[in-house]
Image 1 (tube, one colour):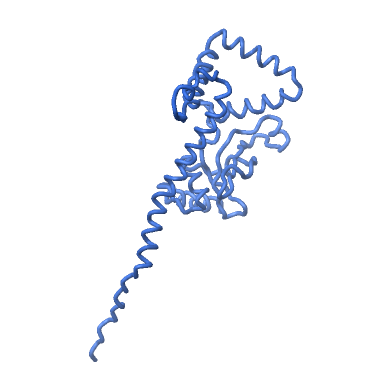
Image 2 (image 1 turned 120 degrees about the vertical axis):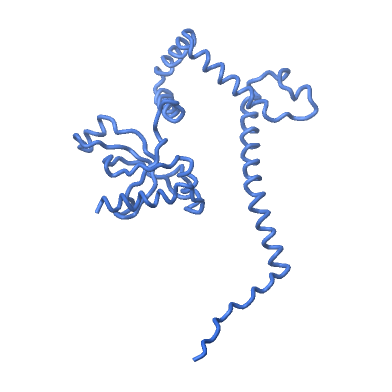
Length: 236
């Protein structure tokens, strides 16, 4: 019996003019879109800092008084120089003394005291060069067993929290579980350290993965899936 030759797929139809225009437009949008959004955010930040700094500088010292056009970024430079000088003074004995006096005055104000201490602790935690908060990424089984979610690992609980949750000798840790697509919102909770699977992923890559709902896959994604399977096997 003679075998029939395999069927060949029909030749691809050439795309029409409208399809090519649509493809070119989408390609241009993908290229120009991120550049436009980045430029807008940069100019917004520069303009905001300039407007904050302008009332603090005498008018005759601002470059706009001598130039025909507005010079963007002067406020950013002045803010950078001012903050650097403030940090330099704070490292000296005189600067530390002035800071202690200022904090003593603020500590006597009932409402301002609580706001200042909370904001100061937040800044020290986020911008501390020695801190480890939110610099590690992990996986936890949430919202149900067998379902894994990315979390940012924070600090262990304090003694009051450990006593309240009855931690005892069991090591606990706090994590922040961000929501998609806005990672600035989410859930903060404590759980045993053994239930957190730390993974080799940077917080930046984790934030990209969360904000894009998985569309932007970091290089460690294959490793992440492998770790999730291993953690799932160990939990069974």
